Length: 294
Length: 294
Image 1: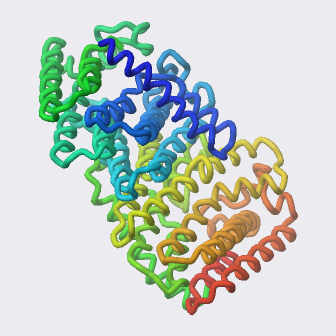
Image 2 (image 1 turned 45 degrees about the horizontal axis):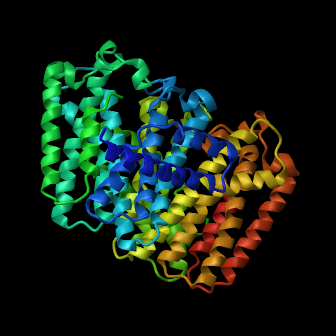
């Protein structure tokens, strides 16, 4: 990670996080529900999605407070999806980022409901955005509903579960990841572009960029499952191979997957280069996604 | 049920339902996910929430197509909550309206995801409403997020689960139902008022009306659990008494609950009488809620 990106993240992360916790702390809701919601929000993670919202706005030289709010909203959607994915009837994971999963601490019913509440809240947060036009709010909400729901993340999770039963083709695998992880990443990037007042041409380039960085993100995850250690990852390494899961290395060999990763990285950078900017954060964040070791 | 209400429902229900199914059928999403979503949407029910949206708009003499769209959105939220409530870790119900519950047919993982998708979709539907201003859409989305989430329906479900472990006071019971079932009913009624261009004074009266009809609805449910039969209800009668659940009859005696029901009915009608109208549907729907036998 470059020192400028490190400084950027160290500056931004506390703001994103405190903003996000505040939305939940301020709710007039049962204490136990707020506790379960906050437990998973506070369980950490790289906060990649909010960072993308803000880095894109910086890239367009138009960062505003709304970026933090939209970042908090998208991180809540991501967190709800993790809570539900970890449930016994889904991936049945006991640990996430080295901590017991939500249902291990609060029980299954509470975990399902904490996830539900974290799915619903972001839409209200977007509707209450300050200094953003009603038209832009509607556009952001439409986009979040599409990318988070049946046509995006939830649909991708369904394809992923169905894919576990058989060997997927590369096209099928791409489709799983375009939806399961790519869609919400795309939302983050496109939302940043919308908030910063991007032209339609710039927005199209950001969507293309999002496609490549989304797949790069997932290929890197698959590679780390093989090359990373359980300690570094905070989750069980080698789980994909053990479960014979369809992954990029399984379909392309480890070297083939690394080549594919490099290809998407090059294409992602090429999109950015077509949008002139003085900010380096987004390019650095792109490299970080590709080179990270956890 | 009056013959005018019967005609109204027979005219409106097919429009509401076909509109709602179309939103799901049109999704570019995995077939299995759409099937699971449609299964529960098609499992029937009284469609009380969409009927309220439309009846309120009729009451204000301003029915539009948007009422059906908002009705579809709110019925999806209601349906997702039923799918999740029925799960083994929640109420563990095998049957709903005489049909196997979603997870009994599709499995738990698919049921959770179908519920999640039905939680997310309505916000996109509201964002895409036609012939409604961006400001009104934002207002509807804010209201739906509040009433469906931690501060409303989901919070009420948490209170309900926690309340099962002990005897609730009447105030506590009212708070459970204000949130668990009342909040979404309030959304339906307030949304109808917003769409029909109600004045703030009218809107306040409708919110007060919603409070009373919401509690009346729940008290009637509790009474039916004692007086109804399993055949009529399409669910196991007498379950509340068997599980020693806190209910209005349990706290107030059956006669006391009936008195309370009549009290809320009178107050609900009093609110409506302060808003002059030529339409009888809403008053008839109010009586139907109170007098229904299932």
